[in-house]
Structures are given as C-alpha cells and as structure tokens.
Image (spheres, rainbow, N blue to C red):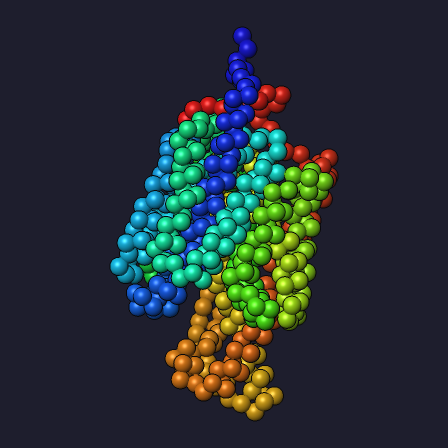
Length: 520
C-alpha cells in the first residue's frame, strides 16, 4: 500500500488567496517600517516634551530592537504548533496596542512600553512571513523572499514621505503615530480572511526533533549566547551570569537534540553577524555623512533615508531575473564586493560624491538579508520555520550585541587617533581637553568625547571637534569594509563548493507535487 501523502493541486481560488496572503505579509512589513521611521522623526520632539535625556531616548530606540529578536526566537519554536494566523493576530494586537499606548503616553515609561510592544509585534511578523512565503513559493524562495522584503524599504519610503510632510505642516506627533494604523489595519483585515499554508516541513512529515537537529547544538549555542548577552546588557547583570545562562540553555537543548547541527547552516548563521552589521550597523553613519551634502542642495536629511530605501525597494521587487541569472550565492558574492567598494568610496567622498558613494553601497547591501534567508530555506527545508527565523534572529541580535559595539569601538578609536594627530598639526589641545579618561570595553580600551566638557567648550573648539569627528567616521568606514570583504571570501568559497557539486540547487522535500493551501 502506497503511504505517500496525497497532495492536492491548488485551484484558481487558492492561487488568488495565495497572492492576497503574500501581499498581506508584504504590508505587515511596511507597518513595521512605519513604526521605525516615525519614531526616528519625532524622538527629538519627545525629548523636549517629556524631558527625556539622550540616554532615555537611546533606551527607547534600543527597546525597538532587542524584543524583536527574543520574539522571533520564541515564535520559531512554537509557531508550527499554534499556527501562523494566531501568531499574526498576536502581532496585530501588539501593533494596535502599541499605537494606543504611545498616543496617550505621558512620559518615559509609556513611550518605552509602546515601543516594546511594537518590537514584539515586529518579531512575530518576521517569524510568520518568512516561512509562509518560503512555503507558498517552494521553487522560487529566494526570488519571493526578496520581493517580500521590499516591504521594509517601501514602508520607509512611504512612511518617510508622510513623516516629512506632516512634520513640515506641524501635525501633532500623536497624529503621525496614528498613521501606523493604516498598514496595520490593512494587513489585519487581509490575514483575517486568509487561509495559511501548512509549512512544507510539517507537510512532508519531518518531525519537530528533526527540525531541531538541523539547527543543532552549535546553532542553539549561538542563539542562546546572543539572547543571554542581549538581556545581560539590558539588566546589567555580570558577564558570568550570561555565560551560565548560555551554557544551561544550550545544555538542555543538546540533551534532547544530540546533534551538532548542519555545518553549512552554522556557517551561514555566523556570516549573518557581519552581514547585519554591514547592512544595519552602518546605516546611521551613512545618513549622517550624506546630510550635510543634502543640505547644500536644499533638502532635509530625511531624504537620505528615502533615497536609499527607494533603491532597495525597486531592486528587491525585480530580484527574480537577477537571482535567476546569478544564482543566490553568486548574487551574494557580487553584492559583498560592491558593498566593499561602496564603503571605501564613501570614506573618501565629499560633497555630492557622497550621494554617488552611498548609491553604490545601497546597491551592495540590497540583497543581503532576503537572499540569505532564501539560501537557508532552500538548503535546509527540514529546518522549517526554525532555521529561517533563527537566521534572521542571529542577524538582528548579532548587530545589537556584537556589531553595534564594534562599530562604536572603531569610531571611538579612530576619533582618539585623529584628535591626537590634529593637535600635533595645529598646536591645539583638543585631545587632552575634551576626551574622557580611558574606558574598557569588550574589545579593549578607548577614549570617548566628554559631552559635559564639549557643552561648555568655545564655539571654535566645537567646530574643530565636529570636523575631526566627521573625518573619523569616514575613516572608520574603511575599517567597517572588512566585514563585507570577509563575507566576499566566504561566499566565494561557497560558490566553488556548490560548483563542485554540480551547481547551486535548492533542496526539495517534495518532488513533482504542489503544496496545498490549508487552514491552520
């Protein structure tokens, strides 16, 4: 008796439902972008209205990121049990409640809570949309994941344009935040009426334990360490506590799974840390560098974000032919090389040439994130939602725990060196007068600008420091270029690895059958 499961072919109605579900996922990502860009635009206004210090503003910004990683890890472990629709309903509820709390905020803690809930919702969205789209398009995962992730930059463009218009027209910030409800209610309405697919891993009969084995102890170690150190940074507990928590979590996982994980998957997880640092970590630097040039031609600094987001959105929407021509690994090889050129070019650019350099960098970083998710999903379909979502979680938490710290350390060290050189050439004492005493970080000792002393400094000294600081940031970009350079080497080795095996080919659990559209 044939035990092969009977798989029904999608009808025209199923195809229409699949398209609507895809666009629901797309719009959900635009909602996450709306929240990010609106908060970035009005944070200074919150600081004045609620008397927030720069530290408090930074904490509100920070809580917009780390709960995302915690949320996506949690849902990855249970999402096949509770269902995709329930997870998206949770995301919608978080987004809705976040907007309400933020609009009625009366101080720091309500703003903090609203941002926290929004980040939780963002993590749930990401935990759903990636495996859902990979399951709906099993033969074109990388293409459709790139199109899906055009939703983020598209949301940045639309949200950025709305934000600039409303700020120029002096709209109340509560109304600006309220516009998040437009994409939120849209995706909420779509998902309520849709049937979600059963993950291909589940449909193929791959057990939960087999999914965990794909990730393995080493994959769990990476995730556990990032989670523990992220929470340790938040709650300021000792390093030893983070290490103990990491070992306990990994030990429990290893006791049940008893697999180190797939070596290629572990390598891709490790690569996600410099990838996320290259893509997300340097964005703030590029925006700051381009802002003076944009002001010279009469534009606000916010247009920088819109400009680079337009490039990313358009390229991701038309990623299909590019992926088909180059293969996912080939695309990552070329993207890494372009990113190196863009960062180095940017470090030497001035005036309008900064725009050109940033364009090259944007071309390089566009395909990184969704293509990596596509490669993981195509090579490890037995890993299901866990493998693809752990990859995104490592990227997001990696840039917070490791990448952002490295970028800050490099910038501080470069500023220290540049101020000393400036003093020697110009017979000044900026290095002695305006830097702090040596501080110790996880990457070594460094000195930073003393904000209190600078606040009391003469205008001429502040201007000199700003010039040196901008040059330090640009010089540091050459150091940051090491990350995509290392990625280029890794991807090139992977390219030859797949070539030795007959070329890059997605791994398919099902062959010659179509996955159905089913209710959770």
